[in-house]
Image 1 (cartoon, one colour):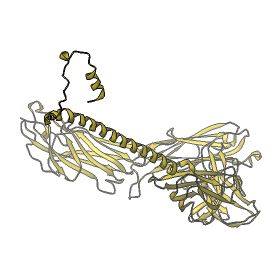
Image 2 (tube, one colour):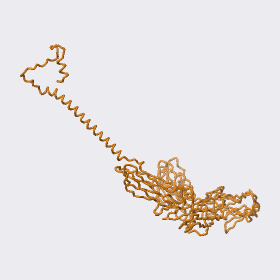
Image 3 (cartoon, rainbow, N blue to C red):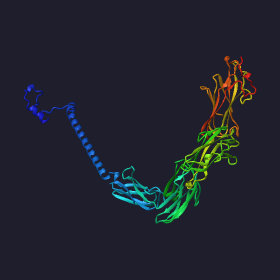
Image 4 (cartoon, helix red, strand yellow):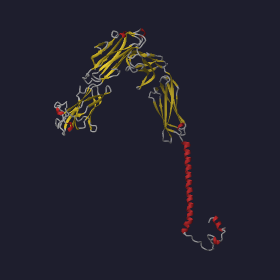
Length: 623
């Protein structure tokens, strides 16, 4: 019994008879009262279980607390001794900030590990600047296996190359370090760049070009190359990129490759040379014409540019300008048999009068019928197919005043049919080249080209022909039924489609027509390998041809297909001709002129005009 409970019993102020229990009397020699097991389990065992439970709880709590403390200490220890910070790994590139084009420079790359962790599997990637020439000539990229970089250490490497570029150009070297920190499975990478400015170019390229050009004129220009440095260059090449519209004729010296590459070889200190070029130029007024030149060395089939330059001339309006139109268009598409009406406009654009002006027009093309040529003025040469107008034809040409303009006209017919005799007779076109010049150039204009020329091309579209025919007899498919057609009885007919194509290849070609509601589709075809389809909803029959070459039906057999239809006449059709098929239509895309070409043929009735065995009377419905 606990002390506090004992005190309560001893000092209880209630009389004995009012107490909840009587104090036990101690009788000497009396055996202690035996306590039953059930009572002990209810009292003593419960107390022991409660105490044991508390002890177990506090024991587990102490163990868990100790584990948490140990884990926290372990994390702190690991982070303190083995933590990794990527920012503590440095990759630095150093070199000259400025250089001459062609200088050999040295790049120093430092890989510093300032962290507390060793770096493993470290690889350095180094890229030389574009258009540089490494000293070992092994390409622009270097991959160095650094293996391990211990903590608080660094590794340093050097890379040498000649760099080339134009003045003011920035040449950028790049480096990347890829590595894996010890005890960490992930890969990390750090990058760096270094920029060097080209402050001078020892190799100079200089064009001598006219400031203004006239379309169609012949031009002469030169390119000078100079080595301003005190060092020599070996195995040099010069490449010139011409503008659109330039046609190379000749040069001195002659090109080494094609018409725009010259092998210069060695160029010593302060040495120079020149290339002279001749050609013709065409273009629109105010159109710039840039000429670009590059000098360098070819290494492993790659051209390393040491220096380059670009200079432009501009197409200007000549003193005598000229332009022309075919049927009021610069780009016109004509048909066979069509008449082409040409209008040529000319003008003196300068402030000086020009005497004895001559205008010519040369016509080219097998599609032209020269016998149909009609001239208002001028003369025509059968040998050269050239029309000429001079002062004797047009009085204004004797002295064309400043700002004065005028026009001349003529017409000519396209042949019908076009002359298609072989597989090469296709894609016909008409070329008209007009020129204007003077026999007496003014002295003030002696240094420039006075005349000019203009060319237009008229393309001729192909002729697509479709023939739709109907037969009862003499057909590719056998037919049956009464002739003339009888009410309530079925008669079958054969429809034949034939297509011809004259001078240009056609794509996406097809033929189609609709059947009237009272006509039946039998499904019989000839030949049966043709892609022909019937849609019962729209009642449209379509023959998909696809590619139809030029000359089909002229130098190769006509393309055709036959299909069968059926007719059961009704009483309201008695005495009439009955329509078997609606209007047929063929369509295809002309590959040469990039236009859709169409052809049509009329409806077919039961009188079958293409079948010689059927008369008009045989086509009328009877009872």
